[in-house]
Length: 135
Ligand SMILES: [Zn+2]
Image 1 (cartoon, rainbow, N blue to C red):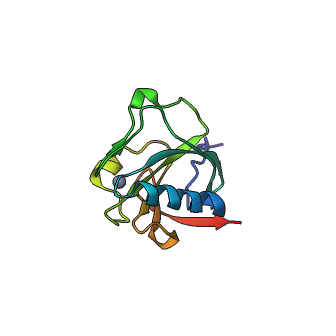
Image 2 (cartoon, helix red, strand yellow):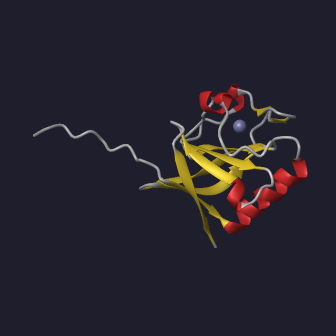
């Protein structure tokens, strides 16, 4: 019998509640042209990452062209599935810096003008994921 490695989930999509995502669009608009960054708390089931809660980490700075948090302020919390930040520039693609600072399993980008078609998501290797809305 061959040893079977535990399957690592190949993520395909990030799932948000409609109201939560709309709230995030509002937050991104209110802070524009500054970036926002938040942690996503939720659960992974099969190929889907479900976002249940948003966490604003201590030490968060919302800056012009840069948003970040101090790594030692990050909660050691396995329910944190990833991060979300905004791109006031309108770019849907992760920057080189983004790809070097992936925290968790998913990275969601809300790009200007902050609606569903300007929202993108990536896994930790930079592969694009679908963004799905539930009512
Ligand atoms: Zn970015």
